[in-house]
Image (cartoon, rainbow, N blue to C red; front, side):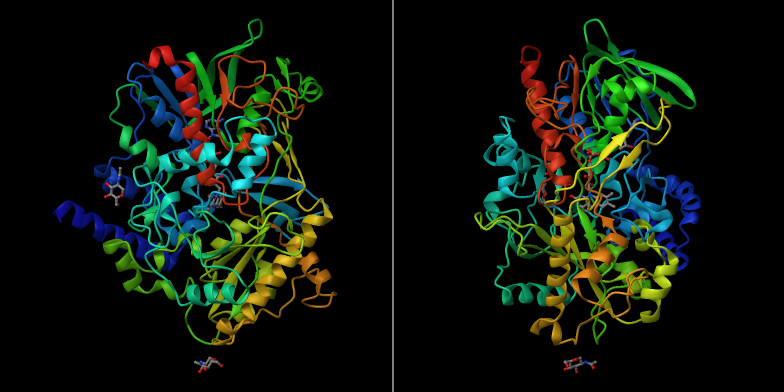
Length: 621
Ligand SMILES: Cc1cc2nc3c(=O)[nH]c(=O)nc-3n(C[C@H](O)[C@H](O)[C@H](O)COP(=O)(O)OP(=O)(O)OC[C@H]3O[C@@H](n4cnc5c(N)ncnc54)[C@H](O)[C@@H]3O)c2cc1C
Ligand SMILES: *[C@@H]1O[C@H](CO)[C@@H](O)[C@H](O)[C@H]1NC(C)=O
Ligand SMILES: *[C@@H]1O[C@H](CO)[C@@H](O)[C@H](O)[C@H]1NC(C)=O
C-alpha cells in the first residue's frame, strides 16, 4: 500500500467515523470540500474544459441509462458525444452501501413531492408522497439501494406482444448479460449472468443470521432458495447488488470512470437542460439549451439528441420543448410541435416499509450497532462488515399472493425485502426522512421500542394497476412538475398489498424466526388506531397512511407502436413524428417490471445504443 492510499484510508476512516457518530447530514457540505481534496487522486470527474459548438450526439442526463449511452456511443472514435448533467460527482460517503438512505438528505436528491392524494400518503410529511430522484453523475444509481434484479420473463414478452418487436425476454437477455460482471457471485444460475460487463454485481460482504432464517421460512412456505435473475424468479435468496469490493458501483463508476480518457467524450455537469431545440418545419431535433453558472448555453447535435433525464424530468423536458398533450401545452402558452401523451402512464412500486419485528437476541443491524469502530475499520480497510449491506437489505423473496395469476406458475405479484434493521433503530432519522414518515409517527410507533433488536420486511406491490400522471406546473423549466402518482387508486392494489403484509407477518411467525421469538410491532399507526390491530382494514389503513415507494418511477414516455394512442416513443425509442430524438431511460417502459428497475434501465441503455449504432451503421463500419 502506498503512503498516499494509506493516508487516504485513514482520512476516510476518520470522516466516516465522525459522520456516523455525529451524523448531522448538514455536515456533509463541510466534508465535501475536505473530501474533494484527498479524493482528487482517485480521478473525480471533471468537466471538459472547452465545449464544442456541435456534437454528433448530445445525451441529456447522466443517470443509469445516460451513462451507458455515453460509454457505448463513444466506442465509435469519430462520434463526438456530449453528456450533460444537472448534478455533480458522487463522493466517498455516497459509496457506503449501508448509508444509502442518507443520500436522500443531500444535494444528490431532487426530492420531488406529489400533490396531496386522497388514496395514499395520507400520514406522510405534508400529506404528500415523497419521490426521491438522483441528481448526480450516475443519477438515481448514486442514491439507490443497489439491489440487482431484472423482473420476470413474462414482463418483456408482454412488451413484445404489445407490438414492441425486439423486446421479448430472449431478445433482451443478451443485453443484461452484456452489461454485467458477476464473476464473484456464488449462489447464482450461471447461464443467466455475465462476467465481462462494466457493471459489477456481487453479494454484500456480510451476512446476519437473519438471512438463513428468512430462506428457511420460505422453504416452509413451499418456496425454493434460488437466483431470482436465473431461470425462475419465484423464490427466496440473498441479495445481489451493484457493488464492487463492498462499495457502491454507480452508473458513473461502472460506465463513465473507465472512459474519461476517450477524446471524443465530453461532459458538462451542474448544467440544467431547459429545452430541446426542434425545427418545427422539419420536426427534427437539432440541439439543446442549458443553464450553467446562471448562463444560457446552446449545443448543437448533428445526429441525435438522446433524452435520458429519468421518468420525471424526461417528460418535463419534452413538454417544455413542445412535445406533449396539446390542450395542456396550449394552456401554458407553449407552441405545440407534436401532440403526444407525454407524462401519462406513470407507474411505481408501492411498499410497506414500516413493519418492524423484534427478536430476543442482537442478531440485527441498527444505527446504534454500527457505531462500532471495528465495523467502520473493516469497511474502510477491507470492504467488509455490515456497512456493505446495500440500504440495509439482505435478502429478498418473490412470492404470489392469493390474487396472483393462477395460469403462469412463475409470475410473482409481491416482493418481500428482508431488512437487517427496522425503523426503531433509525436513530439518525435517515430512513424515515427518505420515506417521509413524520417524527410524530416515529415517536408514537417506534421510539418506545428504541434499543430492541429488530428487523424489517418490506412488502412491495410488483404489478400495480393504478396509473398516475405528470404535468408541467408552468412554462418555467426550473419549476418542479406537478405529479399525481395515483397510488392505490385501484382497490385491487390495496387488497394485494394487505395480503403481502400478512405474508410478512406469517414469515415472522414461522418456526425459523421463532427460534428468536420474533414478534411484530404492536403499536398502531396514528389514524388507524380505531381499527382492529392486525386486521385487513387496519393494514389497508396503514398502507394508505405510510405509503412509501421504492423509487421505481417509470412509464411516462411509453414505448409502443404508433397505433397505440398512449405511446410516446417507438420500439427503437424514437419520439413519434420527430426526427433526431430518442428517449432512453426508465420512462419508456410500457408496464413496470416485477423487479427493481436499475438493472432493467442499464439493459435499456445497452439495447438502445446498439439500435443507434445500427441506424447510423454506414458511419460505424
Ligand atoms: C431511494 C431509491 C432507492 C432505489 N433502490 C433501487 C434498488 O435497490 N435497485 C434498483 O434496481 N433500483 C432502485 N431504484 C431505482 C433505480 O435506481 C432507478 O430506476 C434508475 O436509477 C433510474 O435510471 P434513469 O436512467 O431512468 O434515470 P436517473 O438515473 O434518475 O437519471 C436521470 C439523470 O438526468 C439528470 N437530469 C434530470 N433533468 C435534467 C436536466 N433538465 N438537465 C440535465 N440533467 C438532468 C438527473 O440529475 C439524473 O442524473 C431506487 C430508486 C430510489 C429513488
Ligand atoms: C470482472 O470482475 C472480476 C472480479 O472482480 C475481475 O477480475 C475482472 O477483471 C472483471 N472483468 C472485467 C471485464 O472487468
Ligand atoms: C430467545 O428465544 C429462544 C427461543 O425461545 C430461546 O431458546 C433463547 O434462549 C432466547 N434467547 C435469549 C437471549 O433469551
